[in-house]
Image 1 (cartoon, each protein chain N blue to C red):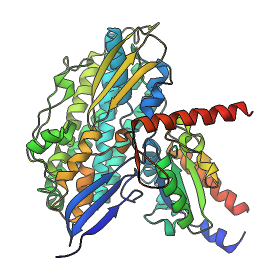
Image 2: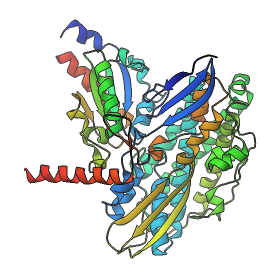
Image 3: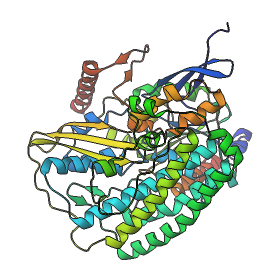
Image 4: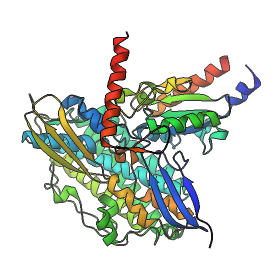
Length: 395
Length: 140
């Protein structure tokens, strides 16, 4: 019997943009077990949210994750609107959908590029990210920033899309169709990509359900789930589109699901632009009464859930966030073991993990590896306030 | 200017640390490498090992867990090593400052040579910042 050997990946690893720590327990080249350690990105956003004004929280939740920076504010404003019992004007709903689908396009292209990079096809990386740039230009045209758009607002959207910008958007979508077809063909035709991705990192339907996987990860395993259809928000019931599902559950299926989803997104954006009515873009909200509300949005990685509770003041009393990667990342525990170390990197990346979204209340003390929870965190929080107070008093 | 500084500015090899960021700055840093901006033309490259790095790019608001790792990485870097803080979080902790999970700002932990503000800074801003950094080293 060989001894148990551990191969660490991370927390700062050239393959990953984000810090996360994987321990691969290997025998020879085969991975037997996997341990996941996260928390390098924890910023305590749920707690911070309780210290901010209702309107400021939209900007805070936007910075949970840079890639889904529309999904989080979108889910949050839906939660507050659920609390208020209002629906935004139709034009605002369509604008929200356009921005949300554009974000899905940019996120999937980004992921496609990274997968190409992971399996050693840097050309795919460069081409996918080149195709992504025009989308970011549209964001800059509409909102003034490439990545944090700040479009969502309680009761509507913060700014309108001008007619000139719509023309530019139409051109970009038309161009993107061609590029997506090129990617689809390139991936379907390449025997090396098939070898690397087919029958690798299989997640069966039962496992996907038992882990509660969401989004493209679940849809590639044959679980027919999509919040946009199952719990309709905005105007997703008024446009024609379909949920893409495949049954294989391997990495190839995950790639293809995302590529086909991008075609759907393009079609949704085109339909939204056709149906965009004239009129108001936001309702005026004067105060937020007592109550609670939930908001669910299909982020690029799966269901994003926000819960808010109000006691009638200008701040939320409780704000709970559940990001899609929180359930998708643990599926690696069953999909990685049994494959080689060289396959592990691509399998770990295939769920499109977003660790910034996932970070929970896990804090590690300086001395050891003790995990702090609940009461200890509150104590830490209070200590920080005292510290800040002291520094102000000393001025 | 010593020989070491002269060699340092010829082709900067960059090591990237994300210390509790939201991913946006990290994406924009990677974006600098892709065809539209392509800073590899100037010999700049992201590398996998801190032992070969000339520049330490730090993003994020510095949470408690990544703090220890950052100190270790800075000690391991060969000196002279330039430290660049990218994004509002790394420069000023941004809106996360009151959070319980954060400690000191980056420049209280390690010396910082260049601050690039913005949430996130555009790739053009990052490139402009690096150019300023090279000019600064050349004037030493």
